[in-house]
Length: 294
Image (cartoon, rainbow, N blue to C red; front, side):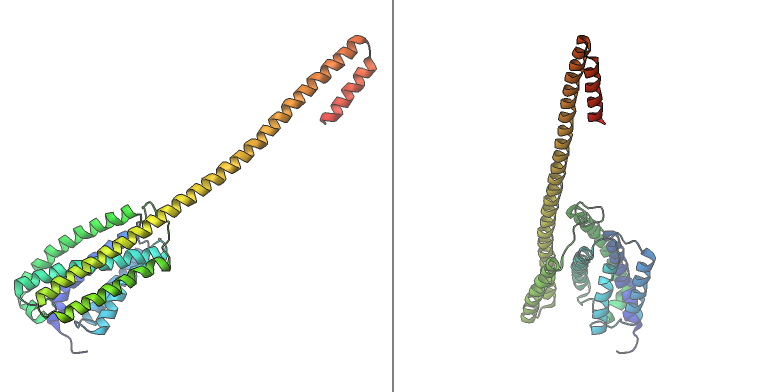
């Protein structure tokens, strides 16, 4: 890795670090992170390493570490693992989607890509102002995305937050992303104009998000259907149990009514025997009736 470059680090402190902090905060809200101290310790250490160790643009170390840091939130939060993975995966797509308009705007202003830090550093004031505007827009996008997740039931207080995504559900996401990435690679190979490549990249990343959203909607609908079926089955079981209990109570009531009728008949017989003068027989009948109910 080449020597330390202060210009690159300065540009990252202006744009990359605030964007990563905003992303980490948004995902922590989506996942309802509970171990916040540990979560932010991991994020801060990761950002420090990104700035002062893995700062070189395009290096494989930086790319691997950036993705590891982006997906680190899946280790936190009370939601099921696959749900955390899906939410984090889509958040990363949203983050990538928000980076392209910023890059395109800077390209229009300077005529050079953001990756060329040697051009960005001399115009750091303009770049900082553009970064602030971009952060405000990104913040609003994250708020909207959070409301979408809540509507789909993928937040902690969502309607289907207890539904767990399975590995089969999740495999649809990287499969679609890989197909679209190959498509983007073929398109970029056939086009040499930088603004056109950026525009196409924005379109493809947008397609990434839309396809993810379709998959997410399909899984959420399936989860809701399974939840409704599970509730219906539980309700049917409760109804069956209540019906069985009611039948038992009805049988007991019927038995008590029959016993009351039998007792009344025995009392009438005893009374008739007593009036007729058959005292011994009346007493014997009372004794038998007492033994029957003991």
